[in-house]
Amino acid sequence: MQETGSLRVRVFTSRAQIPVEGAVVILSKPIEARRRELLSILRTDSSGVARTVTLNTPNQDLSQDPGNLDPFAVYTIAVEHPDYYLALFDGVQVFSGIETVQDVSLTPLPQPQMPGDGSAAPIVVTPQQL
Image (cartoon, rainbow, N blue to C red; front, side):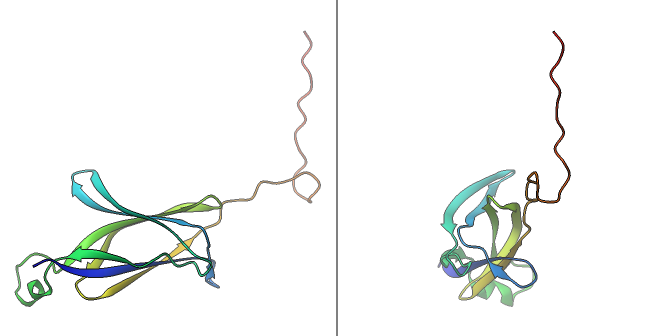
C-alpha cells in the first residue's frame, strides 16, 4: 500500500532569516536518467512559507530490514525569485507519516549601481568620427 509524507518549504534571506515573499517553489521527482516529473509549482506567502504538499513515499516497514529499498522518497526543489540567485536542492528525503521542512536561504543578486549614489562614475562613450 502506498503511503504519504509531506513537505513544507520555508524561504528566507540573510542570517536574520528574513522571509522572502513571492518566491516560486518548483517540486519535481526523478523518473529516468536526466528526466524529472513536475509535481507542483508553489509561491511563498508573506511568511516565506509555501503551502505544504502531500507526497507519495515507500512503506515505512522497509526501514526495518537491512538491504531493502530506501524507506524514503527522493524529490528535487528549485526556488527562484527575480531578486535572488536560484537555489536547487536535489535528493530531498521525504519519509512516510512525517512532515519534512526544507529551509532555503536565498542569496540576493547584486544591485545595479546608479549614477550619483557614490558608486563608480559611468563610462561615457564619445561619438565616432564618420
